[in-house]
Length: 225
Length: 239
Image 1: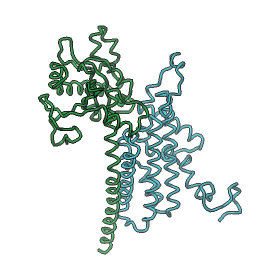
Image 2: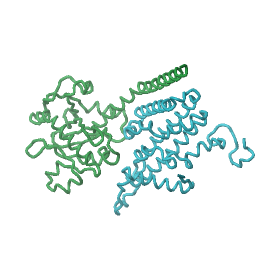
Image 3: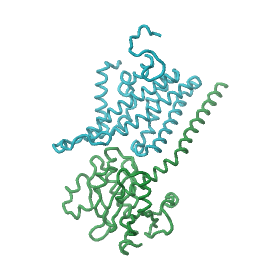
Image 4: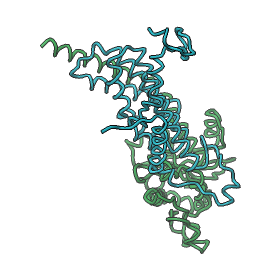
């Protein structure tokens, strides 16, 4: 619509992830930083604290959430004109719960070791406010394509923070990344010790707080009361 | 009224589709999941007796298991139930039966593995304890299923914790069962007598209750298998 005023470098083309029009890019990009579900909306904190001791679990958890939130957004968006208003929350919940169970079963079948480490937290995706929030706030009012982008964006926004926290926690808490030792032995010999605090949930709180602070001072976001 | 009917009809359709999806996933993936569970069990038995090497494929795990592990079913009084295989016993129907997995090398039993389980802090811990042929020295301990806090109680699945048990003795000097206990902090700081130290391993800091759970479950399960083991000891290998 505003092809004359947009001085973007990306010409408007159809298809391809990097040739999205401005609005779609905003839907996808906003949750990555300016409207990040974890750091700005403070949603999904429980799992962000629980599964971020190691990178591996954080990555798998992020992938699971990205998949589930994208699919649930699409399904709910497809149904949005048929869902009776009285039971819309429970319908959203049923869709999300079913997708989460399927994701859990798939993990158990194909990534047994990781699914064992994630234990209950895959199941708890159901109660992750990001999913219900996106279903209710976005998918109920937008067509499937946009809802998919919104889900993808929010899932990625969640995943980025999760992996950042996990990176810090595994590096400082266990001296490794993806289970591979990265802190050289001579540092330990010189008296370096892993930070026990990073392995426990309070460590995640502190890291997450620092990330939120850094991110908000970059975007200039403040909460008004 | 017709509006209500519409709502109910919609709810029923959603429920049906969701339940179909969930059951399809559960049934469709069940074989793979059960194969994973069995493989994991076998891996852990092999690990306890020291036969698991990193990077073993599913096929080599099964092959090694079939070659070297013999499963036995044991009665609570310590006698072997002939003609039964642990894989065919449903523990829910016959909770009294116990299992021993022998590692057999060239016809000689070189290790005995028993399943161990008990409460930790948040969850039940499941693992295997392997004893050397002398039925006194610990050959290995593994935990394969638990819901403890990663980094704290979850450390029980880490090699550093499990390796501490290797070489410890379950029998006291008088030959009675003493088992192995997890202490708070470092065992070597507490017990200077090497004979005492044989019964203690280092604890996990920040996971006192899980550590106590490990101590308790080892005592309990070794007690349970003691009738069988003492028969073996007195007869020199045959029960």
